[in-house]
Length: 242
Image (tube, rainbow, N blue to C red; front, side, top):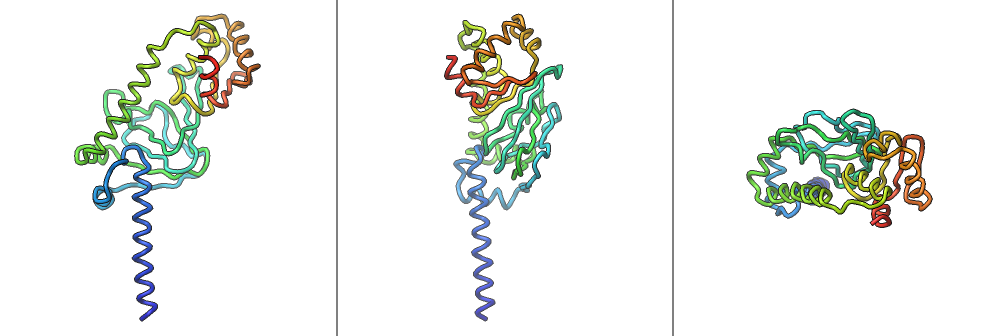
C-alpha cells in the first residue's frame, strides 16, 4: 500500500514537474511571453505542439522553400546561410537561442524561407504549423501583440538601415554592405564572396576592395581566406567603423 501511494505521488509530482518545464519552455519564446498559467494550459491541451531533437548537421529549412510553419529553436546552436539570388555569394551566421524561423514569411505574397538553417550541434526545437499560429493569434491577445512586436521590430530595423548616413570611406561602405545582408548585427559571420563580386556590388575596383579589407584585418576586426571574409564579432567591427 505504501509502495502504491509512493508510486502515485511520484507520478503526480513527475507530471507536475513536466508541465512546469513545458510552461517555462514556452515562456522563454518571444511569441508566448506574457501568457498566464491558464492560457498555457489551454494551449497545451488544445493544440498539437511538435517537440523534436535533431542531430548535428541536420538541415532545418531550405532557402526559397514554402514556409508553412514556424520553428522555435529551444536549445543548441543553429547556423543560418543566406545566398544571393544568383548564388554567386552567401553569408553564414550563428543565430542566438531561443530563435524563431519563418514567422516573418508565414503570410503574405512571398511565403518562402529567406535563408537555409542547419543544426550546428544537437538541437531541440518546437514546430508550430500555420493553422495553429492563426488560431493562437486570433484567440490570445497577448500572443497577437507578441507577433506584431516581432514583425514591427524587423521593419523598424530595416528602415533604420535604409536611412543611415552614407559611409565616407571604402571600409565603411564594405561594413555597410555586410550589415545590410545579415540577420543581426552581432556575433560571428562568414561572407563567402570574391573580391570581384564584392567590388561589383560596391562599384569599386577589386584591388581597392582587397586593400581596404586587409586594413580591417590588420586592426583585428576580420580574417581573410580565399573567397571568405570571417568576422568573429560583428558588433566590434560596427563599433570601430562608426
